[in-house]
Image (cartoon, each protein chain N blue to C red):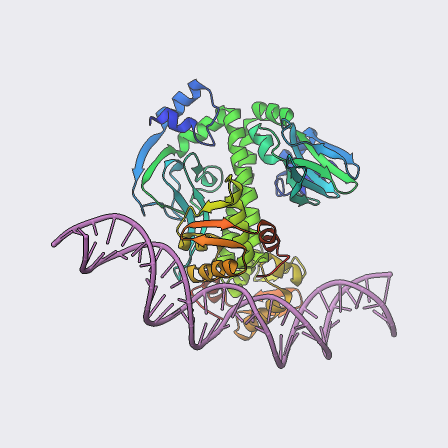
Length: 226
Length: 226
DNA sequence: CGATACTTTGAAGTGTGTCAAACTCTGTGG
DNA sequence: CCACAGAGTTTGACACACTTCAAAGTATCG
């Protein structure tokens, strides 16, 4: 896939006009990534902005003790590392490839100059940041207000909402999902088991079927317990 | 309450500087809403951004079958419809006033025009959102990676960094601080006591003195325990 | 000075993390 | 095709940080 095509498929640059796309294309560098590869570390000086072309990238932070909290997981078409473009200069979190794939890279200076000159690009970026802000706010409240079962229920319902059926396939290994939910594999495993026993879901490896959508929603709201 | 005041109390524009606030203030329109009033319908083209000044607004979607799903309920200070506003897309959900109240409205056209005329407004708003994202990222990771003592230590050091002396005054009732740290009054109280006993701080009501800055910093990093 | 809000302290209960081990699945190479 | 390695997953026993519940103590303000 060529660069211009790829960048038109990203959330930030969707809908831009051709001449601008061409110029951004000159700016962009396509690069491959291997599974497990670190794209940047938290605290490092930001060199630029990324957009996923193929594969998956996780944005996370780790504690000295080695525990990790996943902040986001981005798939094709999603841009990341925008924050240091506009505030501060170092990455607030680390990025690692979850799979083999490709990313587009835009250097910081070039991108900033583009934004200043093109108001609609600025608007698109504002939209992107506003969306991120929203998801982080709900992540914060979930982490501090809800217990793991409620967070898991929310996650399952979110995954399912993008499906047509009552089935869903976990898009990440369970350990990664646990890290996203702010917990660990073992706890996740136990809670999934409880959910099965309670008749809320059925599980078969990575495939999960929602059996009782309403009670799962109650659980997600914290109005009911497991 | 006047417009400038109100917009400074909103989540997205909190911490905005005065000149920017003044310019946004020109753009903003304060309007009343009656209980039950529909502010916009899902699928409508986004005309702008709202922020609740007083009262409550619910964001909901209704299915073809007539069933309604409430997605959010927003109270004073919360902005909504930012994403579609910045992206120029349709409203993905509907908004209805749950109570009598007031909202601030920022029209998309006006905002766009202002951005075109003042590119620095775009950069400033981007910087604002980016800064909030940065702090939210830290909050998310702190909640799951650090224990309460470490979060509290971080908070104290943050408060103190804006002071000239080693003393600091708690800006919120302790119950509120506890909520911010993702815990409860009682726990906070106990940990403060422990910190006193360990000689890290001295406490006198709402006034706290940092006695051992270095060890507090180690605690905040999770490198040491209480 | 009394009422209300805030804070502190104690005892008991619980969700979740830790450690350790067994188990399953997948793909690889002999 | 089987055996093996390695990652991912599940399970159990145990420890502990934190919450809950309850009550007493302390500020603050009319």
